[in-house]
Length: 143
Image (cartoon, rainbow, N blue to C red; front, side, top):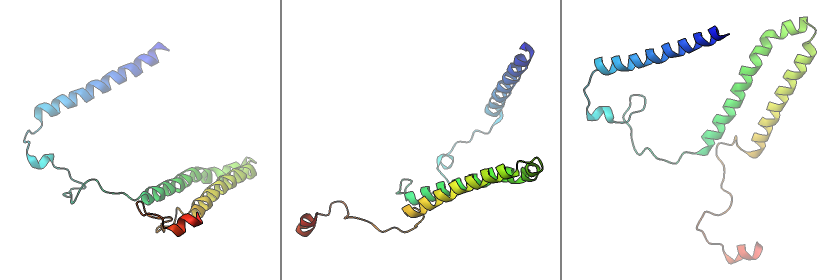
């Protein structure tokens, strides 16, 4: 048993030494030509335009999360689809089909909930009054 731990420890030590050696070789042999252009920020090789801090619409975040949920669903359903024939041959086809159907029903219920909340609507109207706008007397009497 100790031999197995020793081999893992040896591998870890060799890995750390290898990475350290690469850092040292890079520091010794790497080019040293600092200039202002190398310190600039860029994105995908393009020079930045405008400020880095801007208002990011949270709808992008919600849509991205919904995409990730359904992407994970495909990743979880593919292995089941690949082995389903062998499960049917082993007599577990009905149970496997029920599990897949239940999983899919949960996802459809989640999609219906997101849709009902209006998170899939790209353009939403504002409800209420903008901040700073005073209520009129008729609004105060009604509310």
